Length: 489
Image 1 (cartoon, rainbow, N blue to C red):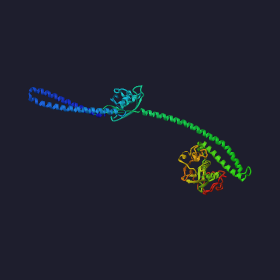
Image 2: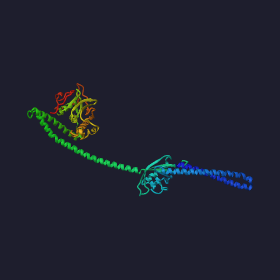
Image 3: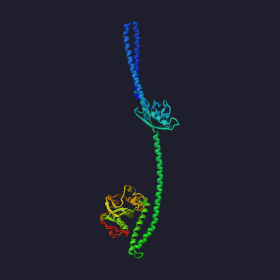
Image 4: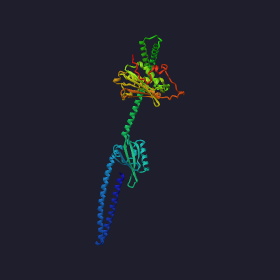
């Protein structure tokens, strides 16, 4: 805009020079006319003609000067309007950084009231930002004229006013010949943005502090829960062990013979004690899950044998209307895992399937190899799962709460503990909704490549609990046999 306005001023100057040249020619014509008058009319005639032509040219030049002046005024008016309407503050300084022009917004930033013209722009900055603007001016003198420089500064012409945060951009102003005659400045007011950003940071810091405090409280609550679970489980372990011992003595005849009716009751009580013992173990595992990784006794076990034992344990407790369907391979499926914890996981999944199938139905237990892992699937035809249920299913103390589960008890620890135990052994647990109703839980654990016949793998240690019969069919359901479980008496 400054260059265009300079061009129009140059045109006006050229017209002015032409007008002055015509005035000189007219003066010479008058002088020649005076000399001619003394010598006679004949000698004066050419001079008079020249004078008339000069007058005509003078009239034309005057019209051109007037048109040029009007054009200059129009351009000046347009420049002034654009100057005042420029977004942000617009300032023009000389080569020393002294303000020669400023629009209304710039004036409001720089002085509040009055005009900033005649002041050095750097003197209106706050603190060390004065040196920043001075360095910007000196640098603008050294760089190419078409280079735009910028800096974020605070403007504070008086201490009575709070500082205004601005982003200043500086670029050279050129005359028609391309020489630097000053600098143009764009000042963008960032005060509201800076205040908003500062407020955002304060809110973030406050929220972070609240989250830290909530986290401290949560950790304290979790610590109290863990201590309670550990204390309660330890206190329960002793009486459960005593009860189990006496029931074992009753069952093996140590305390004398039992009637058939009492034997059935002892069998049921023994199963219940095992269930209670599993609950105590579950509480203990939940209380010390942070230590599980270091407590896992990883050996090689037959995962199918573990499932058979769990099914046998649950046969006396299977409610009426439920039945087990078993499906597993004939050969052993060896996995690297902790026997006790794998048994806990399978028992939890079987118990969960029975508990959430209140109307009965099939409990399908399937054992198979899936690539590098052994998979144990427990499927039921119960109440099923929703997306909302899956979100809380494996959380600590997470329970599915709806009208269909209102009468189903539990601590909300079983699935949480099971998945954490599975992951501590390199496996995992997942759950999905069955298309025909019910749900499927899938437990995986890494398999072991068993040595070829005649070779012995030094790492293989088949762990078989004492209470498990050496013959799979003696106390367990036969593989590949669909059997209806015994109902509770």
